[in-house]
Image 1 (tube, rainbow, N blue to C red):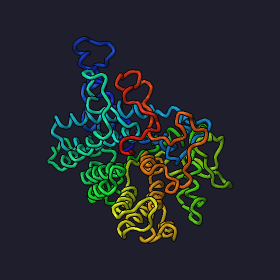
Image 2: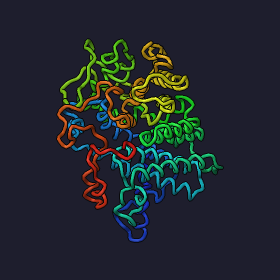
Image 3: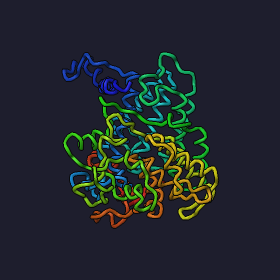
Image 4: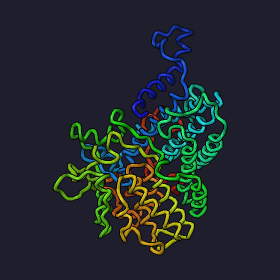
Amino acid sequence: MRNHIFKYILIGLCGFGCLTGCKKFVESGNPNTNPNQPSFVTLNTLLPAVEYYTANNQGNVGYITSMLCQQMAAYTSGPISEDQYREVRISTGYSTLYLNALTNAKIMLELARSLSSPRYMAMARVLFVTNLSLATDTWGDVPLSDAFQSPKVLYPHYDKQQDIYDFMQKYLDSAIAEIGQTNPANYTPGVDDLIYGGSVPKWTQAAWFLKARLYMHTTKKGAVDAANNALTALTNGFTGTASDYQLVFSDKNPNPWYANVSGRISASAVFTIAPSKRFMDALTGAVYPGLFDPRIDTLTKKAAATAYGGIVNGAGAASSNNNFTDATYYGRKAAPLVIGSYSEQKLMEAEARFLVNGGTAASVGSTQAAYDAYRAGVFANLAKLGYDSTYGKNALVSVGAANLTLELILREKQVALFVNPEAWVDVRRWDYDPTLFRGMALPLNIDASAGNSFIRRALYPLDEISRNPNASAAVKPITEKVWWDQ
C-alpha cells in the first residue's frame, strides 16, 4: 500500500488542478490545459494525498520547532537563524499547510458530503483539524472562517485562536458522529487510507485523542477543567500502540526527516541540525545522575569511540558526536511520521490525573491511576522503539505513586514526542521551566528582537504579509504568547 503513495498524490493533485482548469479549456480551448487530464477528483485519490501532506507538514514544522523546544540544535550550515530566534517564520510549513493539506481536506469534505459518504467526511475533518491545530499552535491567529473561498474571498481575515479552538472541538464532534453512520459500499475507504486502512474504530480513537490533546493545551485557562475534559475524551482514545496516528513511509518513498536531515547526512555529508546538548544530557544521566536512557542510541547515532555529545542551542557548532542519521528510528527512509501515539496519550493522561489531584510543578506524589498511566506511557514508547522494560523498571523511573512528579511525566513525554511539534506546545505551556525541563536556557547568540525572552510563536511568512492586507493586523512579536499560553 505504501509503495503507491506518490501515485495517489499525483492523481489527487492533477484532479485538484483541474477543478478550475478543465472547464476553461472546454469553453475557450485553453492551450495551456491538458485535455487528457481528468476533470474531477475522487475520494480515494484525495484521501492519501491529504494524509501524505499532513505527515509532511508535521515534518516541515517539526524541523524548526524541534530546535525551539531544544530537542535539536543547528549546525553552522543549518537553520542557525531560527535556533537563535532570528526570522522564525517556518514559511514552508505555512504554505504547505494551507495550499496542500487544508485546502484539499476541505475539498475532500465537500465531495464526500455530495456523495453521502460520512466516513470520508469524518476522515477529512480529523485531517483538517490535525493541520489546523498545527497552524494555530505555531502562528497563533490564522485564517479560517473565510479562508478556502477563492476567488470570492482573496484576502481572508485572521480568526482568533480561541475561536479556532472552539471550531476544532466541534469539527471533531461532527467527525465522531459521522464516522459511525451508514456508509455506501461504493464509497468505503480501504487501501487508499495510508494511515488506518479504513478502520472506523481507529479513526474514532484518533478523533477523541485529538480532542483530549486540544483540551490539555488549555491548562492555563483552568487546569482542572482542562484535565477533566481531556480524561473524559481519553476514555474513547487509543487502545494500544497499534492505534498510533502515523503514516509509515517506505524505502521507495522516504519520510520527510530523511529527505530534510538524515538523508542529506548519508548522501553528501550535509549537516543541518543535530540533537541538542540539553536533550542529550537528559538521556545520558548528565542532569539525572544514575539514569541512562538506552533510547538515546535509537533516537540518535553516536560516532564510534566518542563520548555522547550534543550541540548547544544557538551556538552554531561545526561538529557533533551525535547525529540524526538514517540509522536512527525516525531518520530511516521507512520510518513512521508519528502525529499522535498511545505513549503520548498515556503520559497526557498521567499529567491530567496529576493536575486533577491538585499537582503542581513543585509538588510530589499523586494517585495510583496517574502513576499507572505514567508507567504505561514509558513502557509503550520503549516497546515502540524496540526495547524491553528494563529501563522502565529503573528505580529512578519506577518511583511509585507517592514520588511521582510533573517533571518525571514531562521528561518522558519529551522523549515520546521526539521531533514532534507537540513537544514545543508542552514546553510553552510550562513556561520553559528549567525545573521541569532540566538544562533549559535561552539560546546562545539570541537575536536582540527576542529581548532575552523565550520564543512563543512563529512569525507569519513575508509573502503572506505582503499579499494579504489582513495579515498586518495579526502580526505579533515572537515573544508574545498565543491565546492558550496566556
